[in-house]
Image (cartoon, rainbow, N blue to C red; front, side, top):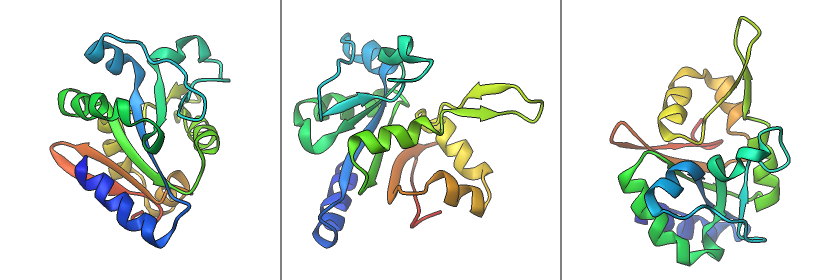
Length: 164
C-alpha cells in the first residue's frame, strides 16, 4: 500500500487533479472489522447506490477517497493484507463520476445471453479479467483510470490507460 501512496504523491506533483481511491469489498470489510460501511458524503460511496442491487450496497463495492479518509486507511491496509478485497485507483475523475463509471462495468453478458455481475472489485477477478481481455478491451475497461493497483497471486499488478 505504501508504494501506491508514494506513486500517487509522485504523479500528483505532475498532475494536481489526480485522486486516490480504495475500492473495497463491503462484505469483506464488515467481516474483517465487524463494522458495516456507512456512507460519508464526499468521502465514500457504495458503487451499488442507485442500481438494482442497491439493497445489497453495504456488502458490495465501496469507493473511498483516501485523501479524505485517513481514519479508515489503517483498517483498509489491514484488510488488504488479510483478505483479497482491496484495490487502489488513481484517476482525475471525482468520487461520484468514478462510481458511475464503475457502475457501468458491473453487468456483463455471457455468450449464451445471460447477464451476470462482474465482480471486478475482487482483485482475484480483476486479475483474471486483466489477463483475459485483449488490448482494445483493456483500453475500454480501464478508460479514464490512470492506474489501478491490486495484488494478484502474490504479485502487484498495475493496470490502467497508461498500462493497458
